[in-house]
Image 1 (spheres, rainbow, N blue to C red):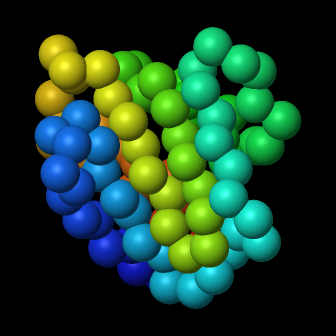
Image 2 (tube, rainbow, N blue to C red):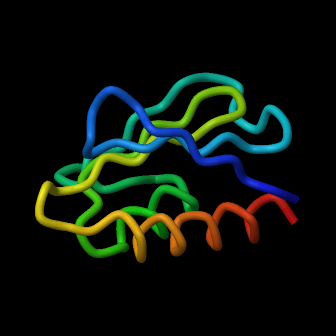
Length: 85
């Protein structure tokens, strides 16, 4: 299943839209708090990610300013594609 990536007004955030609704309620996972969700754990383990927000059919990733989007976006897309399978 595909994942659509959208830029946001925040240059350090990207919205990854899934093919269908996967999350019943919004949840936010900051890197400073241990995540109790396996998907959030995988995403927070990526270098430079400091927050994961999941709601309905999308995941928003916040990264540190000095981390490049290109490799991070590819890694997030791969994880989310596996998650939807």
